[in-house]
Every structure is written in C-alpha cells, then in structure tokens.
Image (tube, rainbow, N blue to C red):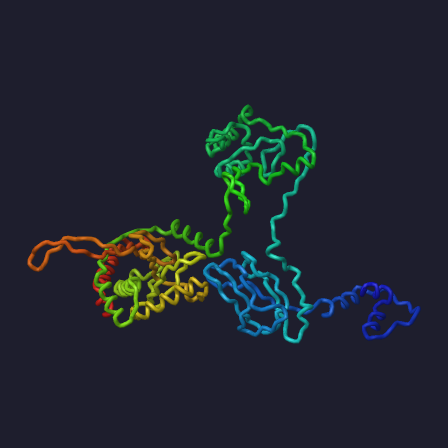
Length: 499
C-alpha cells in the first residue's frame, strides 16, 4: 500500500498522509527520487524494533554444540540480568543458561528439543523495555538450524550417442557397472583419476582392494594401452529413469541393513538407530583420544581391607555412615600428598605438577559416565568426603552439576565393586595422568603363623586395585611405588589421620 501511495502521490504526498493531511486533488507530483525512497524505508517503523542477540554459549571447555532442553521464559516476558533463560544440554550435563541483559524476550528462534546447535548460533532475541517486542527485527542471516540440510544433488543429462569418457569422477554415470571399493582403494582411485572397471577386483565378494588400485596405477604409469581401455558412455536414459537410478557417488559403499519399522516385527538384517546425545558423543571422542594418544601402562595389587571394615563398624556405632570407597578416596589423596610426582597432568607439551589434590569420581548416569570432582581431598576428613561424594553423585544423576564441579581434577577413581567385578582396567581421563580401578572385596584363605609359630588358615577380605598410568609422566617404577604406598595406607587406616 505504501508503494501505491508513493507512486500516486509522490514524496510530498506521503509526508502529508503521514502527518494526517490530504493532498490537493489534481496536484501533480513528480516520481520520488531514490534518496526519498531509501529514507522512507529506513525508518524504524518499517524496519522493526532492533533486537539484542541471545547466542548459544560455551558452558564447558569441551563443548562444541548443545541441545535446547527447555525455555524457562516465554515470548513477551520480562527478563532481568541473571534470570534463568533456558536449559541447555552440554557434553557434560544439563545447565541453566542465565541472561546477561535486561529486557523482554521478543523471539525464540531455536525451539525446545532442538539438537546439535553450534556455539555462537542465534537462539533468541531480546528488546529493551518499553519497545514493541512483537515488531522485533529478525536478522537476515538467521536460519533455522533444523532446516539446514545438504542441497540435493543436481542431475545433468549427457548427450546421446557413444563418446569416450574422461577418467572417472565422483559423479555417477548411468548404466555403468558399480564396483565395491575398500576405503584405501577409493582414495587412490579418486586421487589419480583411475577407472576401476578396467581390471577385475581380486578381493573377497568382489571388493576392489588397495592392491588392485596400486596395480592399476602402475599400469597407468607404464602406459599400457591394452590394459587401460577407454570407457564408452551409453546414451542418456529418460529423465524419469535418471531420477530413479540417481546416486550420490560413483563408487557406492556396501548397502547397510534397512532400518526397522516401529510396531512391526523386525526383519532379518534390520536394526534400530539410537540417536547419540551430546554426552555420549563426547565420551566416545575422549575415550578414543585417550586410547590412541596416551601410552597406557597398568599395575595391580591386592589390599587387605579387614582394618577398614572393622573401623566402619566402630564408626557406625556413633551413627557415622561411610563407605569403603570413601576410605579409598582418602587413602588415594594421602598417597598423592606423599608422592606429589603422581599428582600431575600432561598438556600435550609437558608435565604439570598440581598443588591441589582434586579427585574425580566416576558416576554412571542414564546419559553416560561423568566424573564430578571432590576438591582438596587431602584436607578433608572421611565424613566430609562421604558427604561430598554422595551429594555430587546425586547431582550428576539428576543432571544438575555445575561446570566447576566436573571440570579439572588431578586423579580419577572408578569403582565397580558394587557390580560384583573383581578387577578391571580403566581408561585415563586426559589431561590427567592416572586413574585407579577398584574391584569388589572378596574372601580369601591364607596360611599364617600364630605367636607360637604354628601354621593355621586365616580368612582375609582382599580387594584388587589397578592403576592405569600415562607412561610419559608416570613410569613403571613410580607407579609401583605409588601402589605400594597406597596399599600400606589402605591396610593401616590409622595412618590416614596423620596426614
């Protein structure tokens, strides 16, 4: 309507209309200049209310993307700095995002349940108080993350009639025999522009192997015209047939089993795809990084925990409830204080010895394994350690850990004794240098001598602890001495009160 008024009335006429006047009938007004048009469309009334951007924040050092779990404010509600704005699932936990500005939540651009939202992505807009939040201006460069999808492949027809083709590219040539390639062979063929149809694959089930690709490359370098035959492209099929047979690669990988249909019996070879959460993906990434970049070394020893079990009973009489794992955490901290060379991390370039003894305890949750941290354990008593471990484990299972409660740490402990596991080896949590794997207590009989020198059988409660250490900073001798000292501290819990 604004355009029609402008064309009919001219610039002065529009000004009169906006001021509540009417132009004189028959008054001829020249066509508006470009400057006047730009001034009209540059007004705030037509552009909308400028917004304050709300971006996806980095809520942990390893976070690369997050999921919007729930918006705690609705559009049109007033927001003050420090107010809870939304809940975001990071690679560690579900964390509440707080607003850093005052205003009104004008537009939610990323809805609840959105997955894999990259850091720095625009997720919402605020406007200042007193402004019309319904007319907020949405940036032109914003796009819905859920709508971002790779463009469909463009199919181009080829002229009819036989023709000599160039070396094979990534595009599929209709009517050409498809070859199953190994990853190494695919790389060689695409790098050197070779055609796999010139020789017969030698791999199992007709797979074109790396050796076949190297043989084909050697023949090309020797210039054997009899072996490298030109490929004749067939006539282009009809568009309907082309669409039906289109593929995205000239060398398709072996077909995967079809996805099963909910509510129907699963057919042979089908599978159910389970989407991975951010936490699961980060766990997979860090475990792979740990096992492929850290030279793990392992050492184990058996500890007699009879003294700990006896001390637990004595404390229970005074209504002090502590677990064996609490004693293990305290004994580990005391041992690290006695041997500070083990309380280290590796940052990729060198070793760093830490002053504070912060122990990460592995907690299994529905979303995956997470390691909350008990800070400055050597300075805490058994009762305080028990309370901290219990509170952190509950927050971890509820997904309410704060970033500072799981970031860092100098040593890790993983205990699977409650699941009936005698012993196991754990994967180091980088950049830490060690992790202690704790098994269950088990009764064993040993032959001992009494005060008179007579041999007799005595039952012990033994527990196996296995140390996984980074060979770059904790060598085998240092790891053995650490386990020896830890064993002495566990078997004599009175020593824990002396440090």
